[in-house]
Image (cartoon, helix red, strand yellow):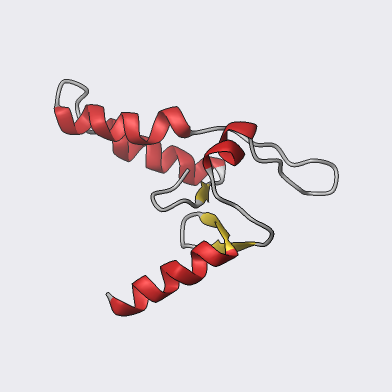
Length: 97
């Protein structure tokens, strides 16, 4: 799960890169521990079904405020799944930044 109510999705190669970048911080430091706790406990592996769809884990759906429509956007090394209303609010916030 992402930072603002969205879901982040990675292919295996980019997930490995992200994991390696986090694991470079020593576990013995607060920064290293917090980085691990922020990302790894919320990670889930999803498979594609026969029609190329993936099913989001129930835990994600229980913790997200997805309504009727979602939007999948490309974000460089990963993709993100947003509730349409939440994405529009985020776009407004980004335009002001």
